[in-house]
Structures are given as structure tokens and as C-alpha cells.
Length: 450
Image 1 (cartoon, helix red, strand yellow):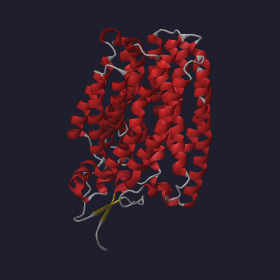
Image 2 (tube, rainbow, N blue to C red):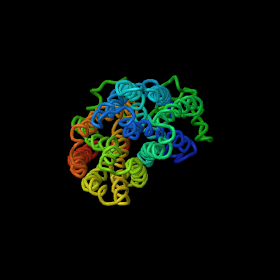
Image 3 (cartoon, rainbow, N blue to C red):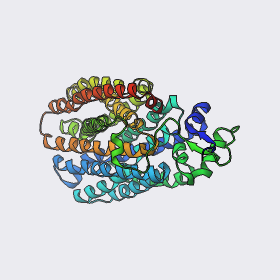
Image 4 (cartoon, rainbow, N blue to C red):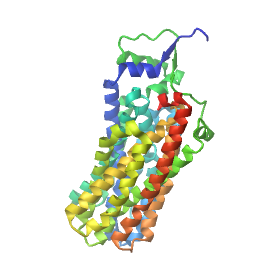
């Protein structure tokens, strides 16, 4: 209708600025990604104990390490689609209940085959978390904080990944490896059930769906008490071009024909290196005659460094996006390569090396999770992010499997090879930076949406 009043949603968010609504969303996101990170990492810290309990060779764990990552490959796309169609809230609740149930079942596995299938199924739900957490936070933030709030939201994934390391060091000797999966199964089920009543929905998702009108008006009244929504007003996201439904072809339009596949490759490279470090560090260091507790602490410190990196660098990533990430890739190469040598020097040297490796590698992952998703409009964001993470999981599957093949090499050599994906990633990321800069120069209106 020509005279139908409009409510510009992005402008509304910009005028209000940071409010209790965004803070509430960040708190919910913290708990959701915390347990997501825990469940991704739990198998790595259970692995040395499974080797002893089940009498298997360390190399036999490669498929088990990769099982959840195969599930994540498909789950990222599946729950990304659920998020764009049925809402970010529904996708996050469903994914938490799903992976919680199968992680809980893993506590009762009695052999590698059972553990493989349970980790595979849990991965489907784990994969749905990050695309929808990125989307719900980026879409509910004022323009100048979109990337920052989304990076803060996903930056706590490594904290979750560190917790099983401390659980393994403190409780597994008494309660057995099963405690890792009991905690990792019960927590997401509780969070998913609580989220039904308390988790907010994305403002921009609601703006695009008339069925959400009542909730949208109630939310606007809460965050802008003095603002009156005109009768029969149409909600618009004025700084984004939306697409009807979803078609993978849309991910290659608006100047993204080269950027989208290069982003997929970038995700694959970083996740290849990251999951090699995450999956094999406790086992490799134990095999190198270090105490199991030292290997567990090194894996935990890797994750803690990742959280510090993501939160410390979020301002830099907000301003410089792909250029900042490219520089981080370059620095990661010598840092990751040094871990094997540090492990043979002293425990403080090892923990320092793993902290800074996590600082960079997981800082990179938090950055590309968000910056990559921001190039897509609201109608595609969860799907676009899900495809990035899904295709990227090919790298995360390859990383642990390559580690299984070369596990007999000296630990120093293994970590030198582990730095290679980051060297290639630096080149790819700089190319993306140049292509995206040219795209935004040719289409200035797209800069506002990012």
C-alpha cells in the first residue's frame, strides 16, 4: 500500500543504542555457547582415558574425533535453515535439546563404534548453535555494535571448551571419563528448556515475519518506551536487501560470487588447524611422556587463550574486519609451530605457547564466524553462516584424521605441519579483504548493512 506507514528497524536500534535487551541476549548467548564449546571439546579430554579403559591405539580415535564434526557439517546448514525459517530462538532450543540428549547417551558408550555414532548425532545439534547465536545478536544490535556484540557472544565458546580440561584433571580420576559426558548432556537440556521461556528472538527476524507482529510491538515498547508503532505499520530493514525464501544461489549474488567460496575455504583452513590442536593436544603431549594432567591443562589453556583473544580483539575486528583477521593468520604460523618445542622445554613454556596459539586461532574463528555472517542480509544470515560453518567443517574433519595418520612423528614436527593451514589462510583472507573492499566501494549501500 502506497500510504502504509513504515517503521525502520535498523534506525530504531541505532537511536536506542545499547540497552538491557542486548545485555539479556548476551547473557543467554553466554550460557548457550559455553555448553556448545564444552560438548565440542569433551571427547578430546576423554580420549586418553578411553585409550586406557578400552585398550585401543591412539590412532584409532581419529574417526571418533571427526564424528561430531561430520554431524556439525550437516547440522550447521540444517539448523541454519531452521533459524531463517522458524526463528533463531526455535533453532537454538532445538539444537540444545538434540545434542544434549546424545551427549548424555555417550556417557554410557562401551566401545568406539557406539561413541562414533553418538558423537555424530550430537554434532547435528552442536552445529546449529553458532550460526543462530551470531544471527540473533547481530540482528538485534545497533549498527556500530553489530560485529562487536556478535563476537562477544561467540567469543565464550573457547571458555566452554576449556571446562572439560579442568573437569578431566579434577574429577575424571575419581568419577571416570563418563562424568565429562554426563555434565555435557544434562546442561544443554536444562538450558534448552529454560530458553523456551526466557530467550529473546531476533528483532529483525520478527520484522520480516507478520506472524511475529505482536511480539515485535511488545519488544519495541520495552526497548523504546516512548515510541508508538503506527496502526498497520510495516516493519522494514531499510539497510538490507532481502531475498524471498532461501536458495543457495543467493549466497553468490550482490558481488559475492568469489567471496562466498573463498570464505568457505577460509573456514575450512582455520578449522582444520584448530581441530587438530583441540583434538590431539592432550593425547600427543601424553604420548610425549608428559603427565596426563599437563596435557589436559594445555588443552584447557588453549581454549582460555581463545576467549581472551576473541574478547580482546573484538574492537579491532569491528573496525578492520578481514584485514585484521589476515594479520592474525600470519602471526599464528610461528606461534602454533612452537608448541611442540615448548612441550619439551618446560610446563610454563608449553602453557604460554598454547595460550597464545588459542588467542590467535580461536580469535580468528570468532572473527570469521561473525564477519563472514555479516556480509549476508537478515533473510539469509543464519543460512549463510550455517553454510560457511558446514562447508568449513570439512577442514575440521580432515584435521583430526591427518593427526591420526601422522601421530607417530615427533611432536615438534607435527606442530610445525599444523601451522601450514594458517599460512594458506593468511593469503586467502587478504584476497577476501581486497575483494570485499572493492565490492563495498562499488556498492556503498552495502557498507551500511555490514
